[in-house]
Length: 155
Image (cartoon, rainbow, N blue to C red; front, side):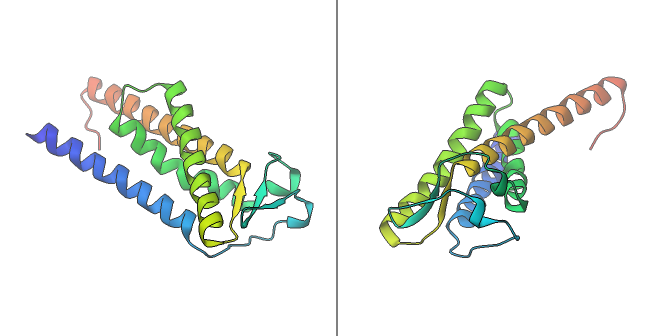
């Protein structure tokens, strides 16, 4: 019974993380951290701004790094909920996360004219954040098991 409760609890955190990511993605507020938008090649299509050339120097700004940080917790939750996954699955989950979020923005632009940026860099940074989060959780789990083997108490 406890294992079932623990799994359901973990899954609740997983879905809460998705809800937060989706909410951040669909929030119609643009945050500007002083990037040089003029130096980024963009295309206007389907009611939004599209960036299809990855890693342009002007696009590697504060929001680039915050996109990674934003998905790190979800990567940890991925490794917590599905501990048997390995790095290829983490990378795939990260890419699918980024594609899902950006596809949602593209759909919102097309249907509602939100004018949001649909950026290939967001897919890359979301994937990176998922993988970093999964690696950090995996390392924490390894450390925890090592400490348990020594007879030390862990969190």
